Length: 179
Ligand SMILES: [Zn+2]
Image (cartoon, rainbow, N blue to C red; front, side):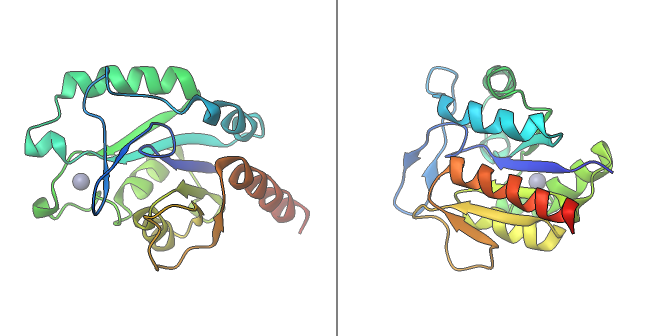
């Protein structure tokens, strides 16, 4: 079984604007500013054999303000920049009550089938509580980057930045292998 690191897209891989209650995601390639400093630490995870999968809620697709073609262009750039193996996305609105919209764990479970992953040995990186909740449900270890959006739900680790998160995952992986 393979292991994955799941990475929330908005706020970790690309910049977002801060709204009063939540982040506001870019909806066009022009607005889509990548956090290129994330590329080096993610390469370290790839180098030790993790499958790298970005996950994202994109309710704009069902609400109609996000064009699918524009999103595909954004995600082509995302894949190329961060050597991602996959991008799993929920296109639904809250009102659709789908199983894949985070904080539900559907995207992680779907990825586990597709990539033959052991979720118990996989990790979730995010700056938002919804991903920690999905990780808990799926049995993954969650690592949150400090932000105004991490809330109070269970999470395994809160760290100051992505570099610290990646170092922590590498140490945890080593501990599991040496146990
Ligand atoms: Zn969904």
